[in-house]
Length: 156
Image (tube, rainbow, N blue to C red; front, side):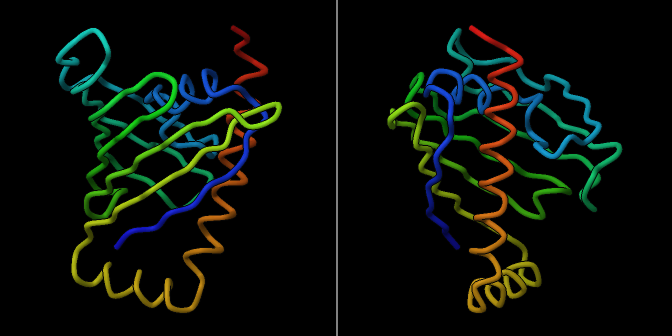
């Protein structure tokens, strides 16, 4: 299953890219997480780096372990990640494309889900009822706010 969407952030594409490419920001809801490098990058650009993100305490029901692998970087316009493990409930391939927009950035996302059979059926029901789209839009609002807050706290 594939979902495409976009949202606006009041931060430059450089700042948005810096946020999205930092594995410490994997859980964007203020959860208590630890990030450990499992495999270093294949090169200086970070491609191939794999991190294990352990969520010990969450503001949502999400708790467990996942792995985030950075597959492609084109700083500051494109980032591709693969996520798998307990929290991902399968494998998720996420592509972020960033472009300047007025005083910030437009973030285009394409998320491809490869889920187990029961999880896939549940997800299709949510898509059919529009619940996944509403959840995605609410997530984008939280994401935009988290990036904007982070950019203010970490000036260039």
